[in-house]
Length: 109
Image (tube, rainbow, N blue to C red; front, side, top):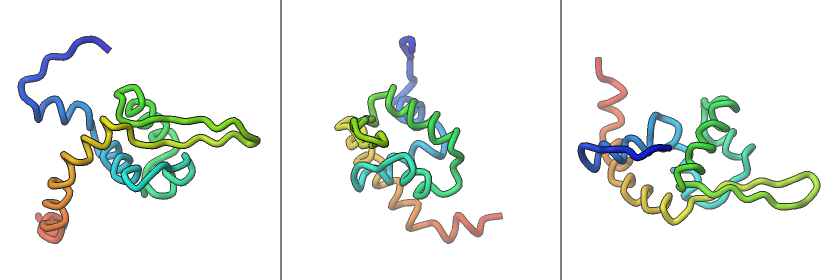
């Protein structure tokens, strides 16, 4: 990735989050490490292909750590990095706002 120029902090944060799935993946990883299959079942509606792409981007961005355990069959776990935890801390108030206004948002025209 090349150097990026942002107009403000929100611009930078939205660039890191990019879309619906990354925030949900980060949200579920906040509870602790999960295997790919666990994430696939937990993040409702995401395709396997999209989950792979999103996890790769989150790992490349330094938000998620991928650990391969050498066993048979191989076990791969995903967890938040310290950088990822800092983003979750920032997103928590936004998630609370969504919870507080979910009914209104679901019923808007």
